[in-house]
Image (cartoon, rainbow, N blue to C red; front, side, top):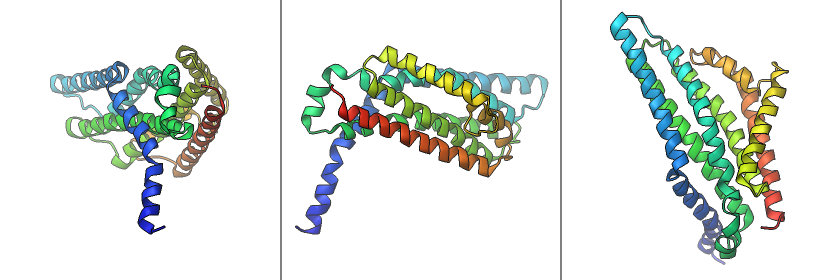
Length: 256
């Protein structure tokens, strides 16, 4: 068999995965939940910018970009977390009725289906958050007093994306295990609150979302512990891979 034929065969193996990935991304960005999340986040940012810029024009008070960036980041996270959970938890469970006939019967394996769904939701959620964060950074630099460190802001965004990576992975895994979307959402919230509460008793553990949020004011100014961030990235990646592997194996062995 020639080298070109081998490469073509290897490429064709990924076509089902790519089909699921592409289709799910297109469906996700056209859902009302995603549009509501994007619209709400943009309105929050626009409101913050209008208020802060108005205060500066009327009173002359210098508005520090680090404070604004931190506040807008927190409100974006708090305002979007519920919609992110709803958006990702139903990605597999909502298609249970047609999954066997319309997807798996077309030569798409369960592993390819799970990976396509998981990666599509990761790219959509994290990509949207990075876009909103980039807009916020640009606005702070041009319209507010610049006391931000560009590198620090990017590090802060990366730290939050690491936590979002784990949250989205948990949601997709629960969606693959539990048939009901509503029950899946409840399960995810119980897990998130339980884990966050448990980690709050161990402040030395840098995986805690509370510790990460408390460190954000220092991160955006360029003051951060690179070793602690490295541990955060390693732990979130390891936990996410472990959760997704369990969910993928469970989904591959269960009845549809």
